[in-house]
Length: 54
Image (cartoon, rainbow, N blue to C red; front, side, top):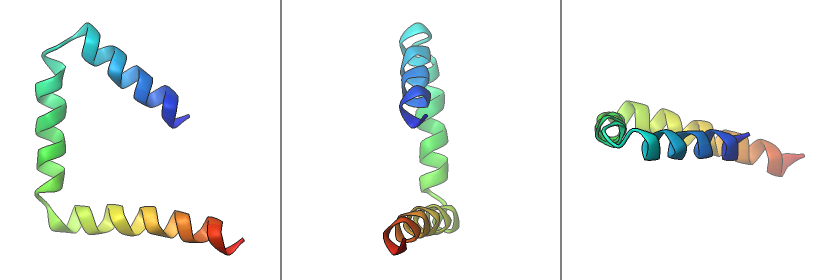
């Protein structure tokens, strides 16, 4: 599923080059917020640990 989403995003970026600036601005906005970064890293770690604990 994540590969389909990545492919769709790349397809949109190829079809509409100005979207690259919007995507980069959104990523920069998220990375500039420490709370969002901590939440994202914690969420990713939790899913990995859950798989490992099975």
